[in-house]
Amino acid sequence: MLYDVIIIGSGPAGISASLYTKRANLKTLIIAKGKGTLEKVGNIENYYGLEEKTDGKKLQEIGKKQAENLGVEIKEEEVVQIEYQNHFIVSTLNHTYEAKTVILATGSARKKVDIKGIKELEGKGVSYCAICDAFFFKGKEVAVLGSKEYALHEAQILLPIAKSVTMLTNGEEAIQKRTEGIEIEEKKVRELRGIEHVEEVTFEDNTSKKIEGLFVALGTASSSDLARKLGVKLDKNTNHIIVNDKMETNLPGLYACGDCVGGTLQIAKAVYEGMVAGMSAIEYLKK
Image: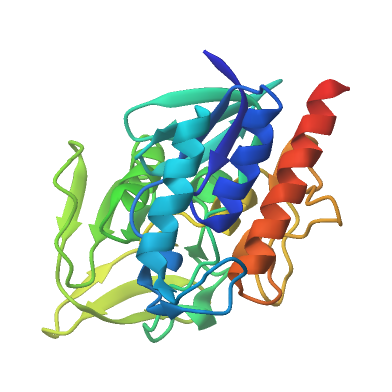
């Protein structure tokens, strides 16, 4: 099935975009998994239309129900990759979906890598994109830092290319789905070491493991992570997706809105940008 629009993210920006695309009679799918930033917010009382203060979880539920009532399809899955082959192919671990346009609205990545040595070794064996850099690690021993579906997907990409692949969960429990050939190491990571390139990772129990590359894939894939794999332009300083005033990226048919494009992190801004992205997708498809 080919959708007119796939929206990745069910926060204020994604829901707002869907209300416009669906009312334009476009076949619209939202894919999202896990709690977004809005659901973690306590009291909200500075948003238009609220007679009394409310919490983010309730506002999120109202928005999703509004979209569903219009007929927007919503699937609770984690997107791990987007490809472009005449149209967009959006992949989760278990399914693929196809669309003429895609709107990225998964919010801003707030995960931080607080492991000594990673920042210093970026570009020297530390990568954030397996599909981009796997070729450079052919026949080498590599590791993926992460414990969830996104990390497993990156490890699966590396498996047929690298000599060995290890998922470093950094003290977290690894995802239950496993792939034969991928080693799991759940020890807490202390430091990544190397001089000219990545050489080893050390753990809190004073043991170490020789590796030649480390792919960072913490948590779920953010809009920036997904955009990077498509060659979309990102701000070098903030890692935000670069868009114009129509929420268009440099790749035709791909839009981004909300926290992932930077600026004031407010619900009102996200809703506005979602509307703009939705209307831009409508205009694009009409052409």
